[in-house]
Length: 169
Image 1 (tube, rainbow, N blue to C red):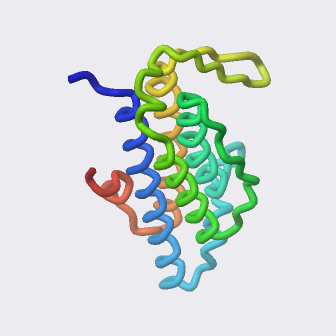
Image 2 (image 1 turned 180 degrees about the horizontal axis):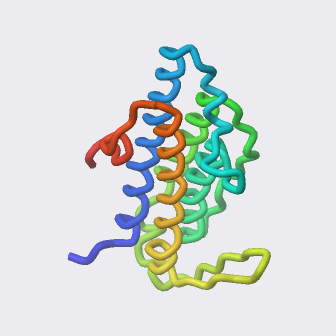
């Protein structure tokens, strides 16, 4: 049986977004134990020219939302990027998960050859649907989830590989 495009994208995004939400729960609990301000975590960066944790989570939500929208032809919800607390970031993850769940499998399966063109200030990056998912959407998503994990782990949040991988499907 062939793998359907939906299976390559939506369950993978869903599992990792749930894991990211659980990592934020651990971050909040760790801050409560240590007496740290959880919001201080949101400003952490790996290096000056990289986005802080808050932006890593926002982008980790935007990637799946935009991927599913581009493949299905459904308009993606717009987020204002105003989150300043862990609960607000968790609400954004929840909203992203709800959007992903609202798109039926049939709107994504069969879109392997759909034209997807990403526009950047320096030009365009054209893809076909499957190449977009496997060559851009998933790697970009995991870059931001991994960076968020690294920022939290570096801040002393007790996370391990199982936290990153999330619950088995």
